[in-house]
Image (cartoon, rainbow, N blue to C red; front, side, top):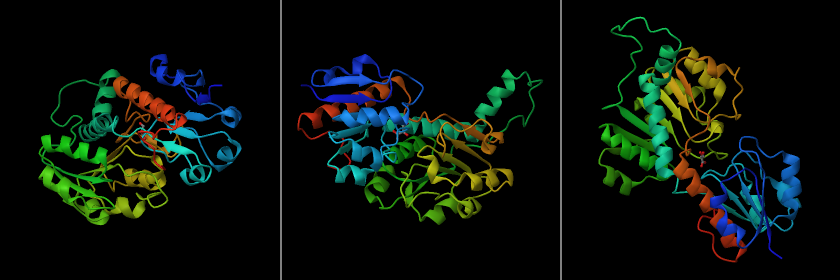
Length: 322
Ligand code: DGY
């Protein structure tokens, strides 16, 4: 009998061929609604594989009941929605989708940086709202991007891809990372390591790319925002939990920083009456970092391959705990 695999969101059929050859595949049929927890728990009980979204909580409670589970493949590079330690104890391989989304996510980080700096969303709404009466010298004037200093917190693959884009804008790039990366510094030419505090004080743009872990939870707090220049722009494309949103709200309200661009939030979707959304100098996106059609298809194929490999006793191309 073929093993059973449950996919928690509707994916294009064309991405599933490899899996369908070796498994019985069932898929939650909604494109924009997550599978309810109760249904996921039921499906997990009989599944050998789960293909999950970052909005699905794969915790110890679920893993302990999923007696036949061998693999959980997350459709994301981040996997903070999965209790990896509990999965390892249960003998479950956890997989993610690195590399295929690096450039697409770096593009979005840069787009958000530019949108925040040049007030693109504010300006676009201004036109559509019929507010544009005349050209005027400082109408919706933003701040430059070229030749400014960019600070990247979390210098993994996406960080390096963002730094590469910044080079085209002749920016100096500072980075902070757990491990210093002399090889990246040498390759880039204008890339310099800084402590977290130094980076906050010196950067015009601060891009957060660090994964959400117990160490990075709430990393951008009041103290951090107060250390930034009052002209700084803060961009987050990693996970909302890395930011203390109350502190960011204060920072925007009291002018500790110039503005922010966020693709991720503590609670997703962020409620439309959330205080952060009231700030004109905040650009908010609905977690679309890796959302190009090409990349999302590649991510789906990689997640499928991850499951197919584990179920066939092969090494998964992107396992995080094996
Ligand atoms: C990821 O892959 O972790 C991204 O946040 C998805 O856009």
